[in-house]
Length: 430
Ligand code: PLP
Image 1 (tube, protein in one colour):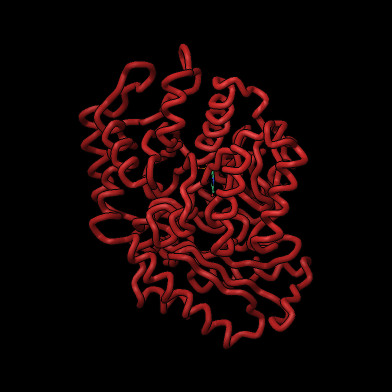
Image 2 (tube, rainbow, N blue to C red):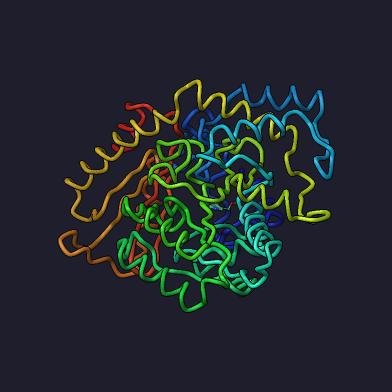
């Protein structure tokens, strides 16, 4: 253990981490094994993975079927290009499968290796879409404050969490952020979006990006009419609507795609995480037939955008098996039913503890807010880092969840595997 911690400090720069803290304290959890909803560390301690690791291990850990799908595909054809006119069966079948699951006329898929690449690809695709139709000035992207869309060049800028701009500045220009519907309510949030659009000039805006439920922002579930208003506004101004389903896709919210909760259809969907339940990296962008048709008609010559691993055959084979499990085991319906049960558990916690404010869940995506006084929603002093301390204490008691703390809030997020049953939820809530 000691040796591993020293090697970790010396050689492993962790993603989204405090390098100083890593040097001072060393890795807190070195995970060795995963089975179902549980993780076991190198000391043999067992934890409930109440975050599905990074909101992604939807079918739970340790599923041999996915290891077998990867091994079978690797033995046959581990990798082959999909550039230009090359293709292969796993990517073709996966694109068709995703098209069959996506809402309405979203029927064509571009593959990537993860969420950040998906959102960068979507930014480039929507700008290209406008350019080839004679509107090159439609370049600006509007998104939501506290939205999280990744850390590549464009996705860092789509992200509305300012901490992510600290490292190297805002990486690209022409990205704007409107108010968050969870905090402001539909009317104010739509007025904010409208005023951003009008200030910048609708004719300069390519697309609006939003998560159907803002995940990393603290599981911020919008009011039920928000996205209908967004769709109307986008139609009014001719702006494309991109739903970032990197967390909410593949059953997380009790619907196959999170946007289905709100009764509207986006023009593009970006996805990653749950498509393979994290067993292997993969992501992508789904575009509507009308966008695909414009690309078919007007995108002349080579589209200079593609990743070596776009449509990776082994990743595609794993994704197909993962989706098969989600369907055969009824995990979307289970997420819905267990999410409702989890929310009942949160409500009991709220009754018992006088520091709990709003509790919420949509499918197996939930949060508990901590406040000094639930009567007036007064938060604790930010210096106290209350949510982080509670998350530490839960870790010691064997539950891994995530704190989100910023100026007006202390939130504890939960995003457990979609295979959770009632007994497991009871023990997590307890
Ligand atoms: N979009 C959303 C909504 C996310 O939650 C994430 C990651 O958490 C991303 C994009 C970025 O995905 P990745 O970390 O795979 O690049």
